[in-house]
Length: 171
Image (cartoon, rainbow, N blue to C red; front, side, top):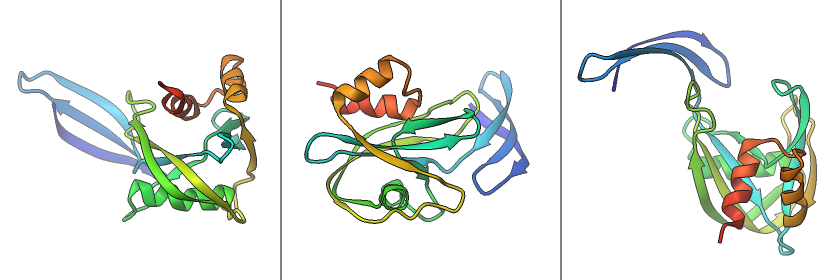
């Protein structure tokens, strides 16, 4: 498939929306509205007790507060790992000496371009969080059992957190 036309119809600080048309070599065409996004870094901070740091914040599209792995948008000129380091400090005040990529995935590839990359962050030091003005973030450490139970009982409904837990606990 090759994109044959793309027209921007909306732009904000977080993403843009385009109306795109693509065609394959047989002449078959498709049209889609696409949310263009620079990608996100997701941080799974694990302490020396094998506990995972989650954040809880109100998510307007979900109309509820969610427990989830900290995450944030990759800024222009920034690698996804640089974004992970910056966002972990901003949202939680935590810094990590060791970083390991766990997985990258598209959370909703039917209409969103965003790719999320989850990093395991270890050998942690604690500091003061620096959240954005529109963020109200609560943090808490969870054990593997607590996370497993919360996922099983739908107390965690955030996909990136479920994917991160799956990759972290896989054999």
